[in-house]
Length: 370
Image (cartoon, rainbow, N blue to C red):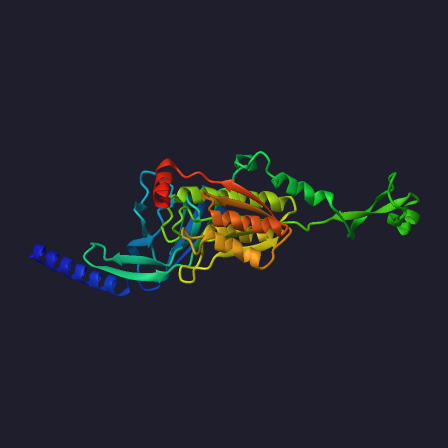
């Protein structure tokens, strides 16, 4: 009789707790995901923070969180007893929550590839103590992270020995602008009389002259040609070469802006998958411009929007002049050579940085060209 009652009570208990967890297990569960940084450079680590709360009296024996995460964001396993499971692009982690408990879990990821990563939804699932039933619910996750191209040392970029990039930096500091005054200084032999600041001279009892600021009339545009074959509609054949080109572009942009050069960026790729427009950012200076360039380079898709000679023709048609252009490309066509010549005739200077494709992709390129 006692065994029979025990069996009956056990069955009733299992039935009741199954009903309770099926009806209220996922109620009043709140979840948020965030990162400790909005943007990092390729190869850096970032902290992902999952915060989950059980805002009810019913304890949760187990709660599984599942989300799709790019394979280019690698989780760092904390210990052998880690409850996190990574399978391809899916990440799973387990929680248990007492009544009115909030749990915050921090996990470190290595950002292995440039890009813009957005987390749309996270799936929550729980069930009864014995695992007889299981309920699911998707919750929005608006967390996102931008991974900038990897920055290199400027001397790692294979610029030609006659590169004018250094001259651009020097030019910024040797052309005085007579309309810009940055302060006063002591008179030096050879200074013109019309440069004397008489008020400052009277105040200091020493001959003072106006200190002229320097002109920044030249601009730098960094262009990347995403065409790797003469067939513009052919898929990118060597993504690694273009990733390296973006690293070169971001490094040159950082170097130039740090030295006071107004810098812009352009390429015949795109960001919007629907409206595949070429990218062109006009030259500006300052930290905000550099961040804008980094973000744009991070979001560039691996595809082409037009032939690169058409891209260059847009600059010719708008009579661009007084601009230094650094062109990073894996190929130079006759049409591109013609466009470059026109740009130089309009008062621009163009330097070409050739990117080498690996042997397999170079052979494929030659076969397409034949």
